[in-house]
Length: 156
Image (cartoon, rainbow, N blue to C red; front, side, top):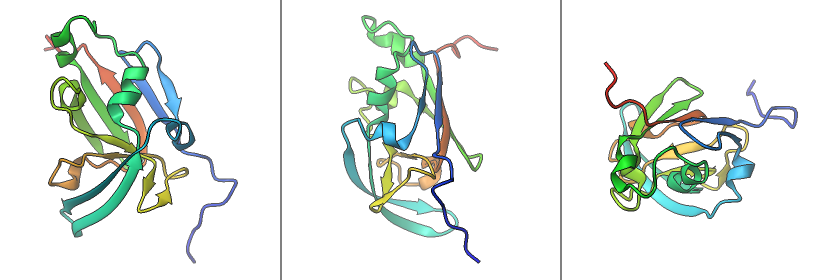
């Protein structure tokens, strides 16, 4: 017997924490309020070969910038010390640098996808989508947490 989602199933939430002025709990419904980007992505998956999907969602950079990252915006290089850790419901993790997504540096169009192939992700949770990656290992399904960390420099 297949299991299907019902109205009683809770909506997925993402804990947005770390070096932020405005930590938050994000939902797919909340992410729909942001300007939506649409991308077609092909990536290699180690277990199922090449995957082709259409994703829609806001840019990760826009969402994180609104949360008030703890760097000094007047000092361009200050943001280069920030890392972004993303965790999925299945335990998968990915790590990005702020420079990758920043328009002044890497300008990577990383999405917090709210739809995959026209299917809403309200209950499963948003997906991290890196259209520029050839391998799908950093595509994280069912994101549960995003942590912004600017304090890693100098740790031992």
